[in-house]
Amino acid sequence: MPNIENRVDGSEESTDGGRVIGEESNVVLRATGLAKTYDSPLPFTQSVEVLDGAGLELRAGEIVGIVGENGSGKSTLMKLLVGALDPDAGSVQASGRVGWCPQDPLLYDRLTVAETMRLFGRAYGMDDDSIDEALDRLAEQLDFERFRDYRIDRLSGGNRQKVNLAVALLHDPDVLLLDEPYTGFDWETYLAFWELTDELRERGTAIAIISHFVSERERFDRIYELADGQLSEVTENDIDDAGTTTSASPENDPTTEVARDA
Amino acid sequence: MPEVARRERFTLGLTTSLKEFLRQPLQVVLLLALPPLVVEAYGQAMASFPALPFMGSMPATLGRINGAVFAAAFLAGLVGLFQVIAAVEADERLELAGFGRLELFARRLGTVLVVSLLAAGTSLAALLWQVDVAAPLAAYGALALAAGLYGLLGMLIGVALPRELEGSLVLVFLADSDDVLASGLANIDAPLTDLTPLHYPHAIFSAAVTDGSVASGDVTGGLAYLAVLGVAALAVYSVSLGQGGVLS
Image 1 (tube, rainbow over the protein chains, first blue to last red):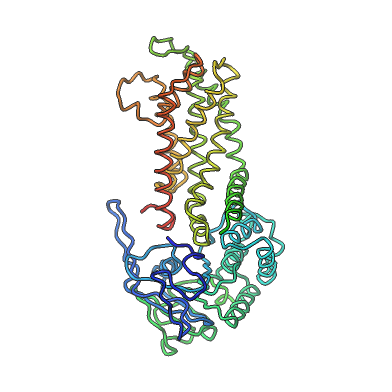
Image 2: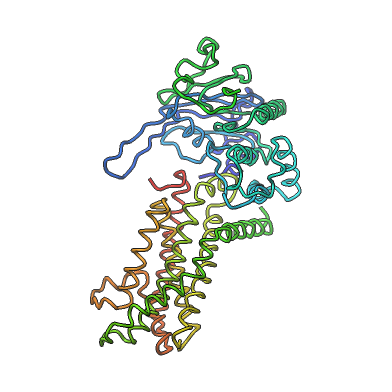
């Protein structure tokens, strides 16, 4: 499996054959025909077809929402986009550095926040000064400065999520893939998150945000809905007054998103 | 990436992995307390047994030998298991961030090997308290081999069965039955018993404790076993990293 650092080289070349992707239309990530079925060799277990020909494009400087019901395959899609899972069919092409914020914070519980950042920073190929600089900036923006020496397992869920997001942002990625990034955030952090994403968008970062539903349509440039294993672009007409798509209704999904609580 | 940076990164990975282990007080306490308890309990339990011809040592000594091998193997196995279960998903994220798969495996393996050496040391120390060991260095090597083998087995179990309770149960039954079979205590004369992971370490350890001899065939066999399990653990761990951290 290629890693984020190696699958992209910043020269607008994809990993599968070195083709340039979407230079004219600024496409920095393109997924085509993604299919994924979970099979198990164990008896009495069902195969689950999650994706069946899903495709999308991300362009530099845009924020794209991906919505879908619980179990529709959003997180699987994200794992395929980032390379954490291999698709059964289809391909993903990306250019530039990719940052990934998984839904569950995939962090080392017994390391401190600062140790976590150093470890991931080194993985991204950063030197100590760059790591310190990025950590200072992110800790201030996301308000977790006072927790730098806390172990991950001693943090609240919201603070853990901040660190989870900070790990994805540490190396200043060109493509940012966020899976339910603001779950557990308080209102101030939620607003800080959107400020940060707006800053990143202005600098040309392409951002994809997966969510159960979209509460503030205007924050997104485009929205995809994942249903029946396929992605389709949602138009204004598909969104109801509550800001949700017709199938991804919050009534069916009592989400914990702070925007709904606020 | 320059070699120096790569080496620094690997060192950072290994030290953070060791920190993670040391920050689990229960495992550290087990490492210190389990060997003396097990060695003495096995010795006391066997003390009332008659000295049968096939035993080769006095029953109490044989019990303590078995206890030392079990303690070293089980402790290292437990650490190998928890190293994988607790961290394979975060390892996958670290791989996506830029760490090599081999580098990540070496990081986990390095921690397991360090703990194996410690477990062998505490187990041997517990044995030395009651038993005169003819060749302590060879005995230590044998225990380290037993611990290394079970550290790798623990990693394998952790990937195949990534649940702490079930994995620990499999490990304890495996280590216990393996210990009994490899020691010859069950007096089962079947070629299959020669294939158990603790067969060679037990043979080396028993000889080192009782008469100080070391059979080169046993050492070669044990090291070959270690190499095979090492390759298997690397393969299974690598596959699991491409599957979201589990084999399915």
